[in-house]
Image 1: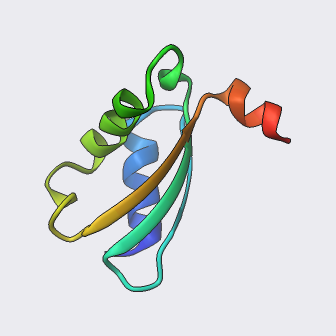
Image 2: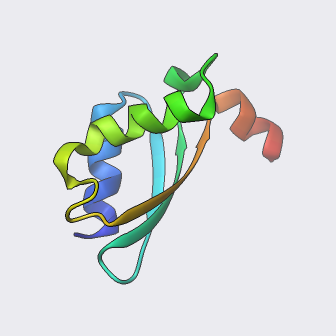
Length: 79
């Protein structure tokens, strides 16, 4: 598994989302995902949305995925 594939899966699964995924060993990754779909959702619900885009790869080809999930407004406030 590679970071570019995970990024594409997240962005395809959450239309309009922007993901930045990093990971050098092929099984442990971290990602920052900015998506309007996160508005009004608690962190656990946001993470579940991302995990749903990856399906059975979670816990298999992707051993670990550390997530930072933000709405576009939250991301803009950080800049």
